[in-house]
Image 1 (tube, helix red, strand yellow):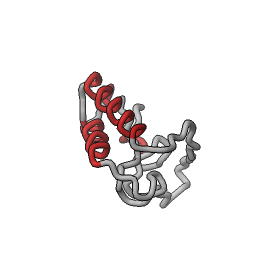
Image 2 (tube, helix red, strand yellow):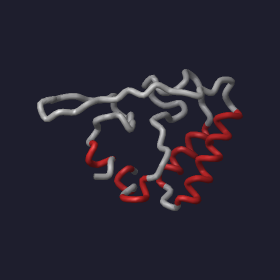
Image 3 (cartoon, helix red, strand yellow):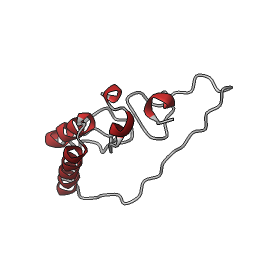
Length: 109
C-alpha cells in the first residue's frame, strides 16, 4: 500500500495501530472494532484527500464511541541514523514517523 502513496499524496494519518492486530505495544488488548480496522485500511489507500479526510473523521468518531479512555498525548521515540550503524530494525509491521524502515522510501527528500 505504501508504494501507492507518492509525492503530495502521502498526506495520510496512517497509524501503526490496527484494531485486533499483532500485540506490538501500539494497541489495546482485546479492543476490536471491525469497521474501524476497515476504515483505517481504506484511509491509507485513498488517494483523494477530501475522501481520505472523511474516512479518518469517521474512524476518529468510531474510536471515540468505542473507547472509555482516549489519550491526549503520546510519547514518540526517535532514532538517529548513521552510516556506521548496521542491523538496526524496528518491530515488523510498525510504520512510524520515527522508524528507520527505509526512510528514503517514506519521506520526501
